[in-house]
Length: 315
Image (cartoon, one colour):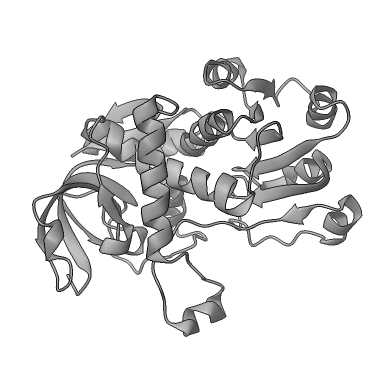
């Protein structure tokens, strides 16, 4: 534990698709050197702190772990730039399910896309943890939300959250999106899946609309597969990148393409999310609560698209 870091006695941690990439040894935004422990985000109580972080000792927090690793353990290390007071109106399981999906969703919709009331928001992968967060944030912002899902049960979940749903297993995505937008397309498209359907989503985006690649779960190269940019030009659309990460890094990290938000943005986002949570506008969707010995099977279910909402591990 170094300066600006805290040690958290973990009570609950969430599973992420990024955990699958790491344990498979495939591409992830931040890779670990074997051996490592999975776990990107946690809830617990700070029991120790490095220089500059002692004010956090004893506080119940939610946090994104150091290098997005180490959360599935009794103790985890996190930078203070990614550590926040836990929502007081959520228990530890709910708090662990809340932080990463809603921070990602808020950054995508409000910081990057500047979503406005009355616009159409397309959420691809709407029944996932981040998808359910994005749907709720879009509804709270006054957008017309359309969710793309795989199967009727996932469609029902998204509709309960305030979206209209398109089941991609039984409908033509291009036709459905245009039918629901009078041929205009979506003003903002948040794509949590990627892969071969990426260019179809581009064609579903309105002229001067904004496409956000947030996840790459259907891409074996995790978003590093090339896409023809001419189609972006042909559609007169914008591509807006977003990644969750707070804190200043040495400029050399820019050589690898990593350029995170400053810590104050994280604090502002968390404050806004706590207000939305307190008002009842949003809530974490928990699909499963599991024990540590069930993690491997749960990650396999995630990979096979057999889950909805957040899977949380009780430590």
